Length: 199
Image (tube, rainbow, N blue to C red):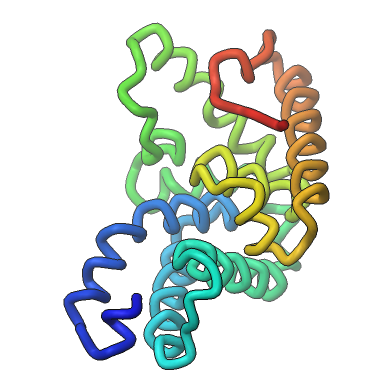
């Protein structure tokens, strides 16, 4: 980012290559709609360009980048708030309409074994629905931590709340997800197979 700030256009290309996919996955899971996520991602990179002159490395670049993306997601959600009640099932439907695949199929699973892949194919749409049903502040913490691998301390900086609040939101999100998935017929503790760490 500092090289781009000094006028090196190739440095910006490197930033986009390095961070585009992770930020897009965060935005997609936050918004639940592929078209909105693409718009927010584009606006995020425009903000990086516009803010380059004022950028100061007080924290990691990714913290600043996720803060920009998160703020744009929140703005987008406010603009679309009248549709919020209708969007709980939107990810699968929106993904099917846009490219013929379910949202879960678009997201990388890290090369799971076939039996695990079958389980994921069944559970993933249910998880996405449960995720979209979470309150926004819990969903953003869960997505940043579990899908983007952002440490709690950085999530606190991105969201502007104390680290203990972030951890509480994560705990509430996990409890809500477990409860909702149980209601949807998914049994067992998914945290055993995932990398969830609340402490």
